[in-house]
Each structure stands twice: as C-alpha cells, then as structure tokens.
Image (cartoon, rainbow over all chains, first blue to last red; front, top):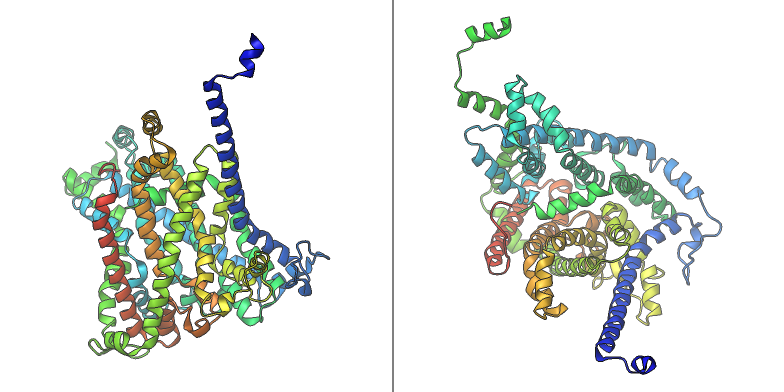
Length: 297
Length: 312
C-alpha cells in the first residue's frame, strides 16, 4: 500500500516539487546575474592591481597577462618616490585638507543644528526653510563670483578658499543633524538648563553623545567628498607643492606620457587609504549614502 | 546668589525670555547666516551682474549688457557642441544608472546570501576618485590592446575606438560613470525597498498577485520618492560632469570636441582664458535650466510619486 502511494504522488506533491524546482532555477539565475555583475565591477579593480605590478612590456599584450611575472614592486617605489608624484607630500596636503574641513563642518554644523533644534528664536522657521531650499540648489551659479571674491581678498593660491567656508556650515549637514537632534526629548535638555547648564554644555555633553551616529556619518561623508575633490584644488591651487593626491595624480599623468604600470600604482595609492577607511567604518558610509537619499527632498 | 549673578543682575537690563532666546539662537546660527549671505546670496546676485560684463579679473568689469548671451547662443559654435555633448551624456547616463541600480537593489533585496559582500563590491568603485577611475578606464578602454576590446573580440565584436573615436568617446565616459555611480544609486534604492512593509507584499500574495504584478503595483509606487530623488540628483549631477571629462580629454576636448562637456567649456573660459563674464553667463544659464527642470519634475511627479506624509 505504502509503495503505491509513493509511486503515485498526489497532485499537491507534484505542485510542491515543481515549485521547488522553479525556486531553484530562480535562485540560480539570481546568483548568476549577481555574480556576473559583481565580476564586471570587481575586474577593473583587479586589473588596476595587476597592472600596477607588471613590467612595462607586459602591460599591453594579446592575450592579456593575468599573472605578472616577475612581480614588479619597483613600480611602487618608482611612482611614489618620483619627484613627479611626491607621495608623502601629496598625502600630507590631502590629510590637511580633509581633516581641517571635517573639523570645520562638524563644529559649525553642530552649533547651527543645535540652534535650529533647541532654541525657539523668532524667524527660525523661515531661516530653516531658506536652508532647505539651498540644499537642492545647483552649486554651479556661485562658482565664478566666489572665485572673484577670494581673488579680491588675495586667498587664491592657498587652501583658505577650500577650508574656511567649511567652518560656516553646510546646508545638508545642518539639516541632517537637526533632524536627529529634534528627536532628543526636551525633558532631558530642559532639566539640564534648570540645573544651571548653559547651551554649550548641553550641546557638548548631551546632544553630541546622543546623535553620535549622525555625527560620524557626516564626518565620513565629508572625508570621502574632500578626498576625491578635484575641481576645488584645480581652481584655487597653483603651487604643485600644495597639491592634494588627486591633483598630483592628474599632474603625474600629464607630465609623464602615460607610464601605465606606475600610473596604476599611483592611482591605487591615492584611493587605498579611503578604501581602508571604508572597511573600518562601512556602516557609516552606507548610512550616509542612504540618508542622502531618504532624508532629501 | 553668587556675586557674579548679583552683579549681572544690576548691570544687565533684564531681558524677556523671548529676547534671550533670540539672542542665543542667532548666536548659534550666526555662522550659517554669514555663509548664506557671503557664499550663497552674494554670489547668486553677483553672477547676474558678472554675466553682463566683460571681466578678466585683472581689470574692473566692463558692462556689456546681453552681449555674452548673444555670443553664447548665436556666435560661439563650441557652446552648442558642449550643450549637445552634455545632453547626450545625461540622456544615457542617468536612466541607465537608475535602471542598473534598481535591478541590483531588487536582486539584493531577496534574502540573498552574502548580501554584504555584493553590496561592498557594487559600492567600492564609488570610492575611487574620478581622476583615478578615469585613468583606470583609459587603460581598460585602450583601442588596441585594452581589456574591454579584447573581451569584445572574444564575443566576436570588433575593436571599438572608445575615447579616441568621435562615436565612442561619450559611451566610454558613460561606461565610467556607470561603474562609479551605480553602487550609490543601488544603496539608496535598497534602503527604499527595505521600507516597504512586508504585510503589504504578503497581502498581495494572498490575493494571488504574481511577482511581476507585485513589482508594478506595490514596489514601484512604494519607492517612487526614492526613484524621484535619484532622478533629480542624477540629472543635476550629470549636467555638471567635469573631472572624468577633463582627465579623459587630456587637456583637450576629445576627438572632434566630443568630450567637451558644459562644465569643461565653462572651466576653460573662466580659468584658462579668464573670460569671467562669459563663464558667469554660462553658469547662470545652466543654473536656470536645472532649476526649471527640477521644478518641472516636482510638478509632474505629483502624478506618480506617492509621498507618505508631509513631515518625514
């Protein structure tokens, strides 16, 4: 009896098995597409690494060489120690540019966001509406007059035009921090006020610890933007000794009629610190991108 | 009562609570008010003035009325070249980026194992500075022995000229933008997809809706704000594409000026020829076009974007 039942499975069982097979096909297809796309994204990276380790006559070959032989570590010493790409100096400039603007944007955005979220001053809502409206505004229109302004006061050729504005706040960062700060209960800050704390104490001891994740998101996003900023330094800096990494890389390319293996070594060195930071603070990078998307409009 | 408090009570007139709040409030937001005035309001007004002058930074600006706009629209052939190049770039890069980003996000949203790995892989190119990624792609897109052409050769497609060819230079640039930008778009979509209540999807499944129907009836309307946001930001960003075109064109404008993007022409006029008035006029026109485009999109979006509620 039992064998007969097994030999003739019920229609429900057939359906279940079909569904199982269909699910199997769907999931295989899903992973196939994902892996295929993932390899399209990752192969350029691998090629960057491989090329940076090749001797010159292995860079362009038919068929392509996937395993450099010998492994030419010398490309890195050649590129990073060459006077055309003074890596340590470029790195020092980048770190200065990145850290000073990050400090500026964190301090100023915290102060302004606190004012918008905790103090009921007249005209606050109007000012906040103005802030929101500048958030989506294309920055292009301010480029020329801002340059003229900095030229007039003699700041062009220095880092001042690139760094000083960050100490006066940025619309999006203010908005983001304010959104987090208004979620902090008033009881908490009012109690501190009654106990005689001033607003700076409250900002520093209560608010900032409570909105730390938002703070880190802003910091990490600023590091990323400024690390990769090309147009700002291109417009405002003229002395090669002051160049940040991306500018140094661009200059390296134009001066040396493209020595690909060294150029790739220099490119990798330019983005390597940021990639390391990404793996350390991945959560904040991803949150940052996501918040930019969801908290906008 | 301490001495200090006692003194301050005598010397300072007592302020009402509102006056005190006004004072502290404005002190806290003071940096931002200055920034709005100096780095936003002044430049916006000044750019209208500069656009009607001839100005090389060294000599004082000279009023020439609408001559810059006349030059731009009627005389300078490079202006329209840059407009059509940029339009081409935006027209392909933005929709393709949105579509790829959405597809990847949909795939990753289905309880995939190793989602963290895939997410990292797709996002990683977004960390590479435009200068470095453009150099990398110049290597990959080498017309003779680049990896991309060798791959196309395996697939039986002939070698393409890419950045050296007038026909293929812009597709090359778009390819670069997809590699670098899709990951970020995907992350935003993924966050939007995670916000869709599971109960809604289950209810639709109970009613017998298949995956295709669920996608069009639930997923798309539920993430319409995200799509809209990505669209607006994508258009604003792509119209201002600069670094990749600057590097790929190697101090030039690409074969037959095909990589001469709007911002590249603007940059040249401003900082190579010091033709500030003309550059300011170009910037103003782009600004007005982008604002109009954004407003039009907001207007039309009311038909298809489903905002959840006003105070998000």
